[in-house]
Length: 74
Image (cartoon, rainbow, N blue to C red; front, top):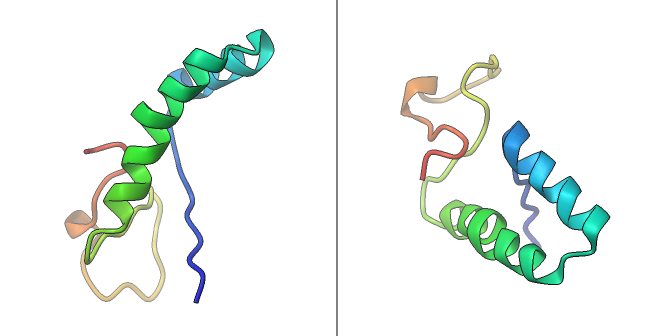
């Protein structure tokens, strides 16, 4: 069964991604993947990982939101 990952990052990282794409900066793109995207993917593979914006309501939640990991908190 294939898994689907979603990544989330803040405005500063979004702006950095925009700069990388506009400048076609391959070195910065690899750095962004290693420093931003890949750590989130590896963290999500850990047992019990759950990433979502804790400020948003979550329906049918089995545990309190404060026990979930906050986005970008690793």
